[in-house]
Amino acid sequence: MKPIMKILTRTNSGWGLKKTICRGKASVHRDRAGVHGNSAGVCRGKACLAPTVTVNTVFVFVACFLLIVFTFNSCRSTKNLATNNRVLPLKTAPSFFSAYQDKAFQYNTLQTRIQFDITTSSGNGMGSRGQLKMVKNERIQLSIQPLLGIVAIMAEITPDSIKIVNRLNRWYMVESFDHIKGDMAIDFNFFNLQDLLTNRLFLPGETNLTDNQFNLYDWEQTATGYLLRTNDQNGLQYAFAADSHEKIVMTEMIDPSTGYMFDCNYQNFQSAGSQLFPANLLIRLQTANNEHHSLTLNFSRIEIDVPFSTNFPVPANYQRVSLMQIIDSIEQL
Image (cartoon, rainbow, N blue to C red):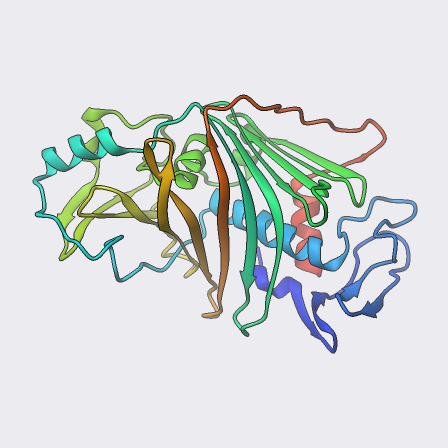
């Protein structure tokens, strides 16, 4: 897979997409928002994989983030492991793990508004709004809502599949993890992703972290907290930084064979009921060409264990595409 930000191109009116991928002749025009496909955002005939620029750019970046996570591109570590200026006396390994278990974020359901903010290596930025819904151990739903709460693109990840519905261009994708794992060496799974989004420790490929698995981490104290490392069976490296309050403040995944780097930094912890939850998630990507890009997720209206609908309709008249078609289209942009 090519470096993800190669999908973007500089235009006189801003950052947009190089072209619209469809079977027929591409129609391109410029306006204040950048480069678009045909003005309706829908290719006639065969399904077009690329919607209009602002929504598509956010979608592609977030989709590529998910694909990178599931195909194990990696990260760059943070330097400051503390979430506040007060550094507590550090604990021994057994005491740390016990305290972590007591303080780890607990939920059955999680619902929050999201502001996506993207910064490219050249310093250009863009963003959109959305919503994240999580039902623990069952599903993760992400929607992009660029205007007036209208859902443009939806994604749902469950323990056995990934679904994407593009309402702008009337296509959908459904892929099972078994099928994806048939083509890629993947240990990272749904349960790891839900822990990544809620600043929890995880072991690649496992469904739950138990007390007798803590010895699978290489553990050390740092000046301001703790650092835990582990590898998966494919040689990919994982690291978790915790502050002296036993909160996970950074998760990173490294693929030494490709040079890609990926990290998640948890910031601005706020009260969510009786617990603390990071209101900001900074995701940083570094390509093999040493290009640096970031995606910031700003959470608001965080609701814990409040019932909500998980309806995920797939219209019968939408065209089905495959994961490889999406990847191929992204690489051609």
